[in-house]
Length: 466
Figure 1 (cartoon, helix red, strand yellow):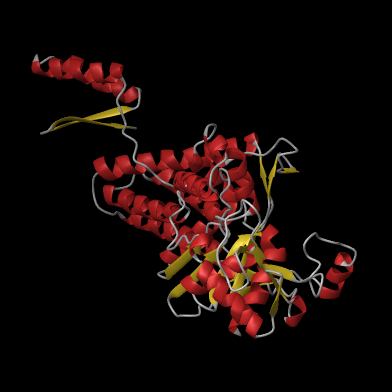
Figure 2 (cartoon, helix red, strand yellow; figure 1 turned 120 degrees about the vertical axis):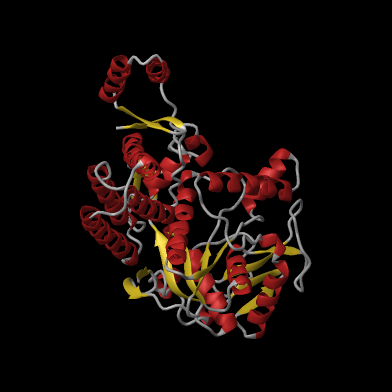
């Protein structure tokens, strides 16, 4: 299995820290509002990565946090006149509803930043002791230049970064030893939530949160750290610096980043009027369609969200649903065991399974995996009507299993017979009782011409669609 590693800019064979196990950390949302459609992409993409690892037999420890203390949360809390915790808890609940709607599996652990303050204080103290950080008037800064490899993820040169910051003056940061040093702990401001620390009342900086939570719930070295490409710098770069400076271990072996989601070819922003929440989108499209759409492109490719493209995804998903409905009908009402023709077709099916797996093992190419599923649908539609019951069951199990990896729910839809057909079946039953076999046969032929096949059994009349 190969993964494109942002750190090395190349595909690398995946070798886990612990055989048979995968530790994944995926940066979660800051919970001050409903999650937007851009948040949805990493949630869906990396949930699918997790599902594929599980399909291959790995035990996955999947950790995704909630940032529940932040300037935006505090701002909204002040606007509403409530505690910041009330805002964060409200939108954690709403986020989980949207994740469930997108069929994103709950993480093994969903840590909240505010519940891990003790670990953050401990890591900051270690960094100070190792001379990687310093305190000034209640603020603790990380010494960026104390970490020689700073910039290795984003490929940014630290001297170029300093040149860009040389003339920038930030209020309250006069105590910095270097313009590039970043905040690990910030002092309390009036009206803000705060926690006690060796440096006074305050709260953690954003970057330290993920370093502490990944260390606690996975370990000093994690297999995969993932998130949107907008997090590469400075967030993930700073995570590497503080984690490796503290632990003297490689922080993450593989870095995965999904590309941006654009709206009708433009970057999503509130000012452009093209900012949509998942909740808003769900009023227009089923979230299963949105999930399928998100996986229709490779995760490292920019994805354009438009009504035309989402409608296309909807139609594609419907093709899969229809094929599965036919398979279920044949698996339930067909006859016979595998024939030689069935075995030949199952061999073709296995070739498509291999194609699907090859796509997923090549840096999780869901677009090509979906293409393989469509080939299965085509094979199924052209063979299942003449195949045996056992053949239909085999194909059905395969398609269901591979769609489950993609997080596509193939709910069994109850097929209700149209009233006019039900009336004809009743009329035929009455005709047979009256020994009017000519009429009974004529009704059977009429139903068959309309795509309804009937069969007399001990339990009564059974019907299927042609």
